[in-house]
Length: 254
Image (cartoon, rainbow, N blue to C red; front, side):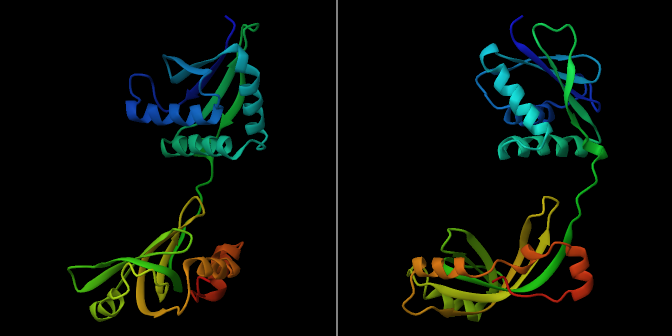
């Protein structure tokens, strides 16, 4: 045998009990983590706890091992590190741990090259939801609604879409700018929550007012937005301490 062999072991399932959809997620994350897709091949499942065996073709075996070593040192490329974290997240959700072992052609035994703590990892903290004043600048591309409130979709100069709700009177005033290319400054109150991956999710954006940015273009708005600070939450290191100190007071997005 000239190929390296890798074994990914999970302690939560057996080949008879692991759902196919779940196994597919593990294998997809493994493929992303190891890279060199044309040279890494799924070989088989072994009995006992779930053991996925993979073969790495000889010509790319050193590159794959170098990549795995860098992951172990937390020095790997972003895509490899993200896939490693994804595997840990899958294991944590399954209340499992895992390990990746490598066996070379000239060896009779395998050696563990990566350990996945899975369920033993501390669960990331979530925060919120919180309200804060928000301002979005961009073009109105949709507006309407059948209930008491109306809904608008604003596309900012970076191409990101922002959905907001407002009363019908305000919606009628805003509707005249639909698809006109006019840049609007929309103000209101946003409700955010911070997720386990430290990203922020906008739950609700209640629009209270808007104004037309006279003689403005999306390009000019882009330059202005880039010169503004991001949301103050991004600059807070200890969110919990900040919340305690501020007692929920908030600043604008910009």
